[in-house]
Image (tube, rainbow, N blue to C red):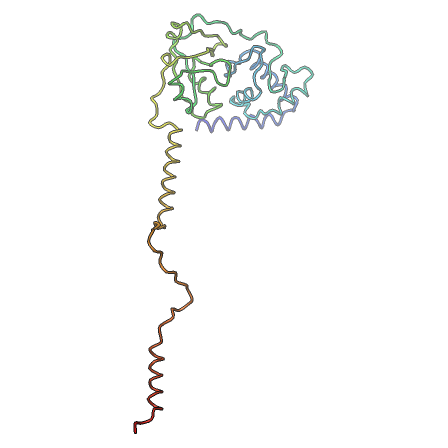
Length: 272
């Protein structure tokens, strides 16, 4: 019900935006983009590279998660670059960044991180993570958050049902593993050992195992269906073929012999 209310509000907001001057809409989107990319990317679950860039795809995903901006597409960025004399963002192929980055927090070593952090992984990688630990995948570093909902929000961009891991920071610091500040909500690290996080119990059957079992079951079913109407080969003499539409010829020689005897008896002369 709550989601339906938010969707209704978003629809009303879009209708109001359409009623505005198109240039006014683009100006508002430009201000919002400058805030996301130039001040608080961590608030939207974004991590910028060393040059302040982030992928346009990730930027749009983060923006469309925000009420009132679910309608944003690539075309809105293009309109902003074309319609405004001095757009607050700049694009380099598939990357985007703010021109004014003076208010961004620099990524520095964190001396006193929270005791617990959260990171999410995909279901298919859970078995490997339990064995080898957490390694960076889509980004240069592992993105952790002190807010579990934020960690889930970031991971849902790639997996609809991510697995939440709780990172025990003290254990990592004891092993001389460090964290970097990436804003107020996000923290970066290079590796999380298997004994430094906890997660839900391992499912009885992992997705890959279920898929393999399903494939095996379908193969057995196929074999049963295939063998149901077949017969086994035999080395005995094969049965004689019967041809449909032809009657088997009967032995009528006895009839011919009987007729012949009648004729001979009729025309035979009596003995003198």
